[in-house]
Image (cartoon, rainbow, N blue to C red):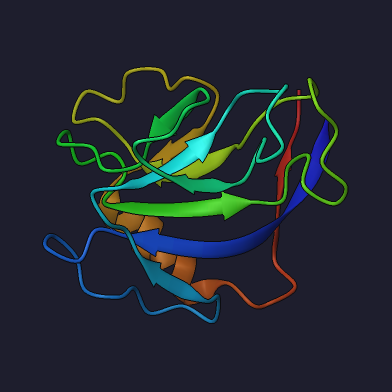
Length: 126
């Protein structure tokens, strides 16, 4: 369907050390969120909570966002209404479906990050 660049890795510092990766890594904070409001000037970009527009918190208790890889989806350029972030992240224990992301077992995600180069892409095929 398409191939996507890997932009950066975000991680929850109380649960995970910075992953071994060539990608830039940044700490998540309790206020970390992602704007999903296509009418907002910050659409498909990180924001801080509280936030006036619709934003998804990246500080989740379930562990799914302990490690989050931001993929290059609708970001260069950002087109309002064409979809907000697609994240590669830690899977639920039962591997239940995501809300539009890609989920891997924690150890598989860490191995994937160790194997990536700055030119690595994720390709979605249908």
